[in-house]
Amino acid sequence: MTSRFVIIGGGPAGTEAATSAARLGAEVTLIERDILGGAAHLWDCIPSKTMIATGEMIDEVASAQGMGLTPANCEVDLDALRKRVVGIESILERQKRTLLDSQGVNIVHGTGRIADSHVVVADTAEGSLSFEADSIMVCTGSSPRIPDWATPDGRQILTTRDAYPPPTLPEHLVVIGSGVTGVEFVSMFASLGSRVTLVVSRQHVLPGKDPEVAGVLEDAFVEKGVRLLKGARAVDIEQSPDSVLVKCDDGRLVEGSHALLAIGSVPNTPGLGLEDVGVEMDGPWVRHLDHHMRTNIEYIYVAGDISGKLPLSSVATMQGRKIAEHVMGLHKIGHRHLDYDKAASAIFTDPEIADVGLAEADAFAEGRKVRVTKVPFAASAKALINNDPTGFVKMISDPATGVVLGGSIVGRSAAELISVIAVAVTNGLTTADIAESILVHPALSEALREAAE
Image 1 (cartoon, rainbow, N blue to C red):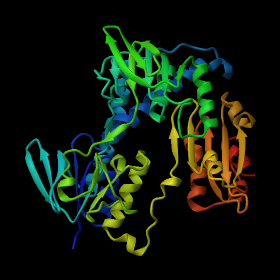
Image 2 (image 1 turned 60 degrees about the vertical axis):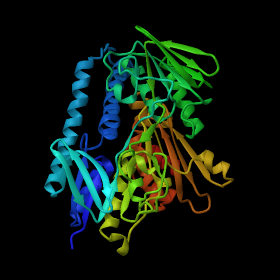
Image 3 (image 1 turned 180 degrees about the vertical axis):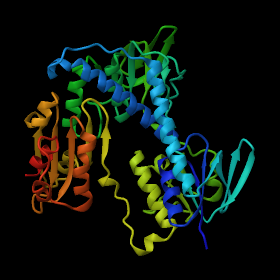
Image 4 (image 1 turned 90 degrees about the vertical axis):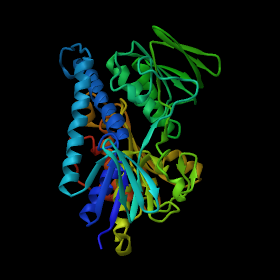
């Protein structure tokens, strides 16, 4: 008998679950109200990285003298940049739709909700459609968190989704929030030519990350002219026709042309009917999930941002795949569960940052004995050729066995280079496995081999 699998949400988790389950023989219905590929993915992740790439190009042109060239000035064309962002989004959505169509997935454009036990309803422009399901997966993503003291207008007070790009390039942007999203926006707009002030509620940016990594990023920000307002928590924004005034809890004030809120997100769970069918909730969050991503109702799964796990598109994609495998019974013949402690992540600032596995500070906090090796890119021939020796590779390993436990990379192509350490961490490889690999010369990856020696 064919399994009927209904998915609410067409983001990275939903589309991966749909394609994986369809390949395994399921009858799949995918309900999405906005854009295939996911709003958080195609309206946050992809546009931000597109704009960051433009900023990086501006920085490279500005540093042309270091490459033996005459420097040139670049001006941002917001209309052209906006068309580029929309164009990339459209290409990626078409690719998703083509793949889903080729696998026979029933795509429904509408708002999905669980109406009864094993019944999902999609409210569409043509009316309501009802689908019976043996298994249901909910992966409806999240929306920017808006504090009660701020009222975004999309013009001067911006959420992250108002800034791809904004109507005008900010003369002076005040970024509120120094986590991953906040620092990416700082790096992006500083490269695009805006003056930027970052309100940092802690004593360094990126709380929870390696302090040494955060220090390199702060130095880069200061070099770009970014003002860091440390130990300050924003509590109010006053708005006038030409400016905004951000007030902090310690009395400090920051005036700018625009303010950007980058203080997290909230799950899109209201109206889904989860509580009505008995799913235990803690506010907008699902309370209990097992390692198969099942709720306390055994046929209902959740994934992506609303799962409360790492809010990364890569994690959501893998969750979708694992859920599809479980729905189709593959866990009975061999199934590797997700280990979130081994998920690689990256921050697309300048310099780029990436890490995976055990962090040095966490190891020492736990009293765990580790071997820490660090190789600066200043010692890399390729980094010198690129005229970009900023940053380092740091590798964490078990001193007794040599097993690679984690690592951090700061510098050009960090998001690509971390893959080597991620594979090692996931598969229990040792530093010798990396050190004895014959890598390309000259290449930035040589620093990985040196760190493993």
